[in-house]
Image: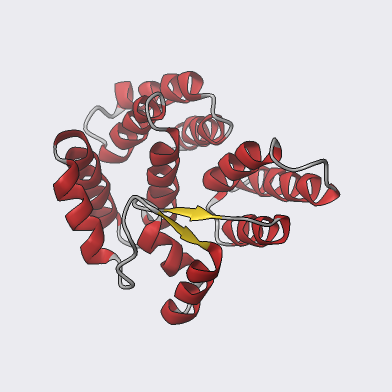
Length: 199
C-alpha cells in the first residue's frame, strides 16, 4: 500500500472510530475510486452505511475486520460479508451461523451477565476469543461501575477500540463523573495517536 493510500485509510478509520461516519465514508470512497475492486475498502464503506441503522453492529464488524485482516484476510472478508448478507436477508440464518461459532452457546440476541462473560473468558483462555464469540450476537449486562471499568479496559487492551468508545459514550450518561472515565478516554486517545503514527 502506498503512503498516500495508507494516510487516507488511517484518516478514514479514525473518523469511523470517532463516529464521524459521513467523513469516514467520504475517505473510503476516495480509496474505492482508486481501487474499485478492493474488498476491504468496500466493507469499510458498507460499515458506515450500517452504522446509520445499527451502530453497534457496524462497530463490531469494524473492530473484527481491523483485528483479523492482518492474520487471515480472505477468511475475515468472507466472514464479514456473510454476516452482512445474512443480517440483511435472513435473521434466522444469521443466528444459526453465530450459534455455531459460539463455543459456550450463549443465548443469542439476549444479554448475558458480566459474571457469565468472565466465566467464558476463563473457558476460552482469552478475553479476545471470548468476546469475538458473542460480539455479533449478544449484549453484556453490566450492573456495576467496577465491572464497567474492567470490561472497557479489557476492550482497549485487546484493541476493540471502536467498541470501547461506544461503551464509554453510552454508559457515561449512566454514571456520575468518575476520574476513571477520563483515564479510559485518555488511554483510547493515546492508542489513536499510536495508530496514526504507524508507518
